[in-house]
Amino acid sequence: MIRGLDNTLPSDEPLRFILKAGDFTTAMRISQRINSVWPAVAVALDDQTVECQLPAAYTQNPTAFISQVEQLAVVPDQAAKVVVDERTGAIVIGGNVVIGEAAVAHGGLTVRIGRKAFVSQPPPLSDGVTVVGEDEQVEVAESGGPLVYLPTTSSVEELAQALNSVGAGPRELISILQALKVAGALWGELIVL
Image 1 (cartoon, rainbow, N blue to C red):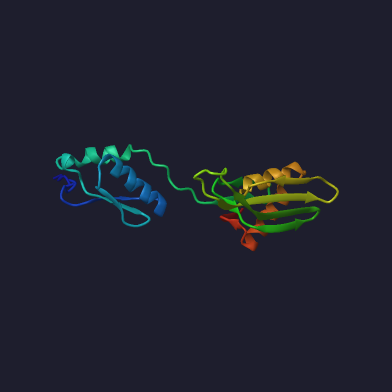
Image 2 (spheres, rainbow, N blue to C red):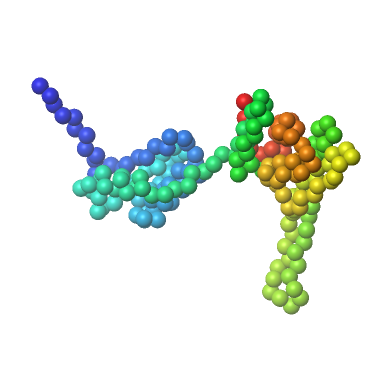
């Protein structure tokens, strides 16, 4: 004797979407995206759970609602990560990685990362407001080599470009990234393989 299992979705209880990788920003983006199509039906409960009340139009067919939610485009949040393979010298840098104020000397290379204050003034007799801000700067020097200056920079990508311009290889960059992480100036996760 074969008996089927009751696998119906209840129309009076909320649906819960569970994220495979928990992230508060991604959960909020999913609930906001659902609410942009069906106002006030979704809420992010935590970093892994988005709860939805079934819209009235889908009470008889919750599968259609779930199918449409699955097709909504949402950009997940990306963690700030730098992955280095010391054996091969491969370096993979995520776009959200930022470098704070620091100075590093490695072999014949010196790296300075700092901030410089600036003031932006509006033209006379305008309704503008004076703004004070900060520019980040990266300087790389090699003994006997050129000095590279990059204004308003704070990314690992720009640090790598500055080091490459003075002939630094992947091994030097890996060592400098590790030192920046220890100093607390690399704002992201450093994974060494």
